[in-house]
Length: 297
Image (cartoon, rainbow, N blue to C red; front, side, top):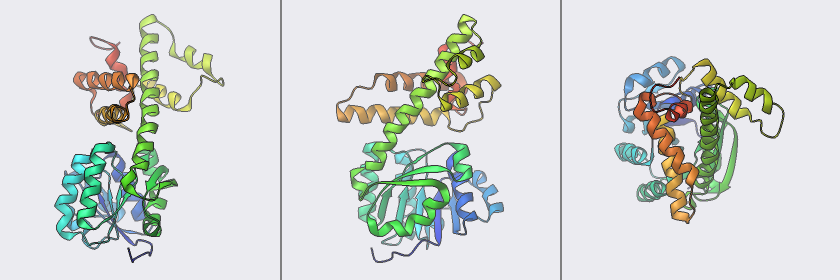
């Protein structure tokens, strides 16, 4: 790659819970931002923040220094990039932030080779609020020459970038993201299930929180998720249906590595039951509802 200057323009493909916040912060940082979303109406509010909303992925990526994909899964990311292909310039940096899993990343890597794109495997850790405030943790793997190009993008969307590899082909960043997500999802389930048990046994949940406060069993993330349940606030920072997808990617990665992940598999099933009960678009702490056969108390 010959161009090593910092990016001045970026195309954001996908403006859901994560992508919309990322696009706003990119625009606020002074970058020229074009954004595309399958449902255009969901992207339209970004125009108030200086983002140009386009009708097609190709319009968004035309002339962009960096293409940032933050979509539902790897299959959607690949489909979207194929739609963008006519306008992609050889040598363009592609920051792939979708949690795609190992198998899908292989397909994305092959597409990048085919189109002579410089792929950076760059999933992010964080949910709605960190995305909106530019406080995501960016996990990145890509060649050294592309790092100055993507730096303004990662600096705008995250509080920290951790480089874990010099090539996207090894999926180093995706592998780390799957491990991190396995922990996040398990803590979410543990919180939801303990809260459900407390409800069933007539135990005051605040009593549980008081009992663990300040000790080794306390957990800040657990407190955030349990506070949502106590408030009855299921506005998604990370949707149940997306969490189920990630849980299944984690199980698949374990199978590829010969590692049995019983908790991840059971967690995926909890998410499936919560989705079946009508909670797919709510926050993933809706795992709580999977503990009850009928209507949750």
